[in-house]
Image (cartoon, rainbow, N blue to C red; front, side, top):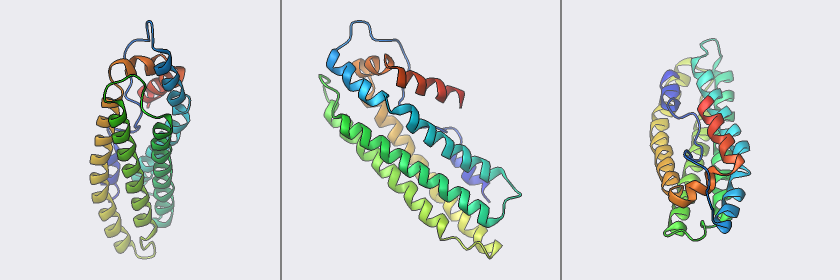
Length: 193
């Protein structure tokens, strides 16, 4: 039953700042300061998000888990994902729009909205998992199937959030972000996971 849930999560274990490329050459001091504010907190957030995806995938593959154990693992992971994306949205909201970037405010607001919506979607999945009947194997399996179906919709939201982040993190913003150690760490840890 839970294999569908694992499949919905595979292919995108971590929603990191979509960063690749070269370092800042001459730089824009205001934009570099904005990027530092964002990147300083990225590694911790990514670690939490990545660990949650790993936990869900592991629970989905573990056929020896009882329904209660599976419910607890999924519930914690969904809560961690909700918290991680909420923190990411708050970080980008609090950082403000990237200075001196055309369309930066609109792109920043779009990212915050999509990450906030994604956080809420994971919180809803947690509620669904918490409400599953763990005493009846058949009802539990059926409920888990519903959660797996919902995960496919959440995956679409996650992909939309990634696309929005890539739009925000283009051009000069990308250059400023890739020059920051925190974002370099996020890229490296994302590549390893």
